[in-house]
Length: 248
Image (cartoon, rainbow, N blue to C red):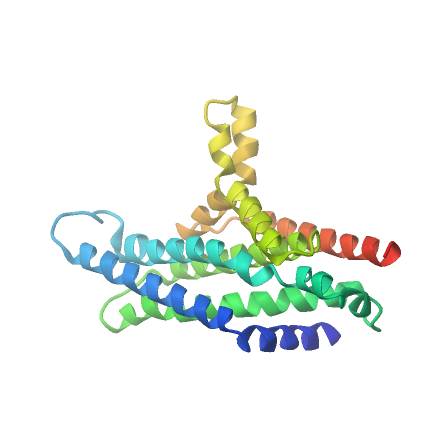
């Protein structure tokens, strides 16, 4: 499938530059530091994690920090997907290649998602290492990992679409971060509003849906939210590229 070849090419391009390695190193360093601090506090007899257990405090806390770190890093990974093609003048050649726009968008999207999931896999080894000395709520851990995979996929889809809107990677990164941050904290806008408005803003919040999965509550509404978000922004990316091909 052509989309898989494009994804492989995107991964090779990522790892040939220093940015991907810097992202991996930064995420691992800060996640490991936070994991160690959380674990040390859990072992203190101060009752900080009373009633939440190891999975609800250390594991969930580590995964939530990982989501925040990758929210900060994802725009720098997605900013070059199409904006650099526009800046270098190679996008018309890419759009005229014998591949469909769907394959092109899916290929670049999958390349970024695989990279982000690789970073997640390395972080996930930290909580799993606790199985050597204690028990974990594996159901809650699996729900948290699923939520993070969906969240990272949404980050990639949003960043991909923003990168089609400009020829400047820095502008694409700033726009992606602004969009992700808005969707991350939009539930705050519902505070003090009517119940219906608060419900709408809460549903639009990526953080609220992620927190449900992080707590071990697998609800179809949370999964559907992320799938709709991913499909919508990928479709917008395809629509934008189609408009650019029709009106060069």
